[in-house]
Image (cartoon, rainbow, N blue to C red; front, side, top):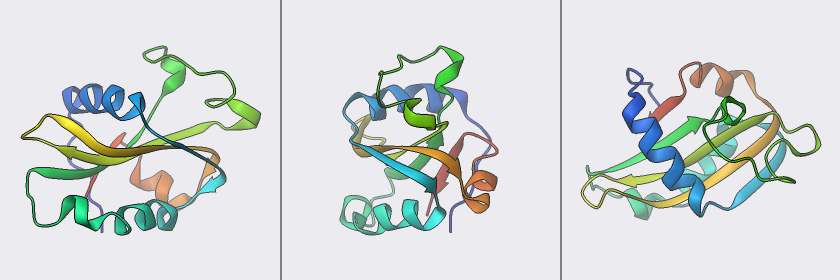
Length: 122
């Protein structure tokens, strides 16, 4: 089950550009917590028992002007919500895998989880 630590802005600002740089994009009507969990579960080998690797998701506010908006992906066809998820290796200081989810809306459980932008998953 995920937990939300205190919002660490430096971590968000550090992870988001790294994760967005090469992230595949999944476009869905409604993003659910199960959709996010399944991606992590299929990649459990990336985390393993390594405590230096964090599984994370960030609700990105691309409208704030902090990141470039790619026409046809972000904001496309009514996609208003963006979640970036991935695995961050603290030792290597890099995102080892990530994807971006663009959705028209977030399911209530996922929206509640991302009341603060960053969620770290166990």
